[in-house]
Structures are given as C-alpha cells and as structure tokens.
Length: 159
Image 1 (tube, rainbow, N blue to C red):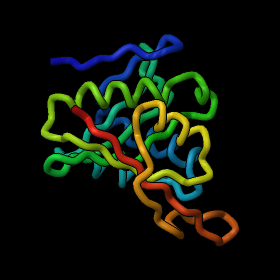
Image 2: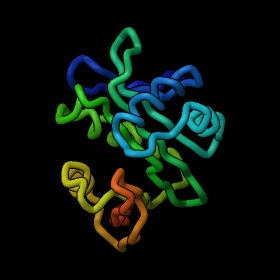
Image 3: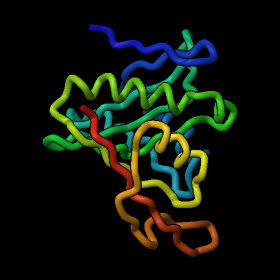
Image 4: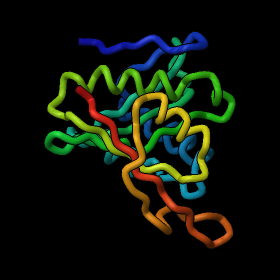
C-alpha cells in the first residue's frame, strides 16, 4: 500500500527509502551544528522501529524529512529538518501531520521530542501541534562556540 500525504508548495510526504540517506544527511547538516552522517540515516532507515518521512516534489527533490522511533506505546521524534529554502512554508507541519496520521495505526499512544529551548520557530510549531513542555535537559545540544544549549522536552498524546 502506497502511503502519500499532500503538502504545501506542490510537495507531498511519503515514507523515506534507503536511497534518501545522503540527501537527509545534507539537509540535517544545514539544520544542526552537528549533522548526522548518511551512514546514521542508513541505519535508521533499516530499523523497523523507525518511521521516516520525506517531503518532496514529483521528481523526488527533498524539502525536508522527519524521523520517528517507536518503542512499545511511545514514539519519539528523533529529528526533523527542513531545507533552508523551504522553511516557513509549512513543510515541517506537513511532515508532522503525516507522522501523526501514520502513528494512529501503530501501538504508540504518546509522542516525545527534545528541542533547543532557543529554537522559537520549532517550539511554536510543536505547541500548535499540541505538545507541552514536560522537562528540560541542560547541556543537551552542543553549540559552535563550545557551550551547550538546554533542550526542552515536550510530549503530547496521540490518541
């Protein structure tokens, strides 16, 4: 069964494929101080506990992706990244909406994530999606200057 969700800007969301690992690594490196290598994405894509979604056009040019791991009745957003030229165009929202729709068919009943407490656009999106802050993790994200940012831990029910 082909899974396919509509997204803005002529894009759609579909499950990622192993061939997407390199492009996912490129977009991740543009989005985070420490990007993950393509081999890391290859491992996640091979893991049956991980759901990975790409937002792309009809020629499969990727605008962003989301990676979620399911463990028992919980899901965790491991990472989400949108190419800088697509930011602010609701691509992240489309990726999350697709993930939520797909998670309804899984045993997961609650979803967790960590976000840099200074990442205002991401926090705004997560709050609009129903996530609430439940704790913090000091020193969680490394910064280019050698310091470390605090992560805000957020959660929401799925059902």
